[in-house]
Image 1 (cartoon, rainbow, N blue to C red):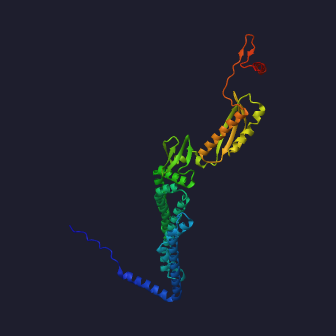
Image 2: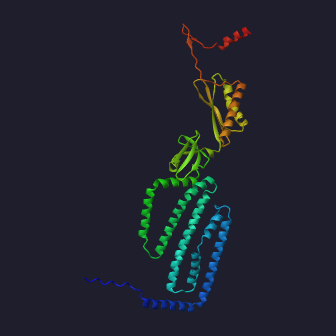
Image 3: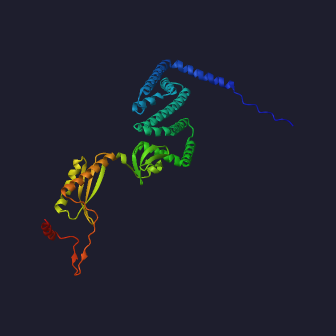
Length: 391
């Protein structure tokens, strides 16, 4: 049995390459000799451009190192410029030569491709630094928010970098003449699949970022949601931990927490107090008419803001009044103290002026054998002579 003759591997045809290289060299020499003056000026300009860009990068790096606040716009801009790559600076200088020295078409096309790659990648790097810097700036005034953001920063940096460099790769391939329609479709399908698989995690993560940026509450604030009032202890990437006023720890997912109506008690500008007051029906009308002015005097004497006071309704056993006033403080303890002081002052003033508070009472009328009502108390006219006789 005869063995098949092995096919010889293709060899590099040096005889075809050497003439081509000689043609390129001849074209290059001819271009240099024919455009010596323009080439010299362009090279000098390119050197100046390169040195200027390098000097700007050094200045920016120095400003970034000496900046005490990373969240300042000056620091963000300096860090962005300090990320200017050497490849970008070289290609900008080469592009200057390419534009003003009448370079051959072959060299022009090569420089244009490299310049496009350098500019696209550099813009992606700059945008990444700006976006991450603005994220840090948004939460720069809260230490606890920065702690939460630091935990999520790895994922945020990865997401931002992937998105920007994916777009840069597509732009580069498109400029090189590659059909990127299939690539874009593949990235879209892959992104949808990842999003659906990690929907719960990303939902809570974006909710945490929303809390950090929008700041509906911060660590240490006392908030109320549903029937729970609690103090915020930690805002995590997936959940928020709260300490209820009754002592137990509450843990709720960030996305679920933002779905609820949240009352931030810490951000209250003032505390409103409502006092219901009940007076006996035997209170003279003139005295009852002067009660609102009396209450206003007491409230203002204690440094609170009087809102309104007046007759409310006829109760089963009382004349009902209502007092509304504001304590100009967001501190709950201050509100309690002011409410206590004003309440005691009302009791003292009413006692001094003979104004009686009502309490639930029930009067029973008894009928005599002849059908007449027997009053449960002595009439005022009949009681007066008896009092004088005793005297």
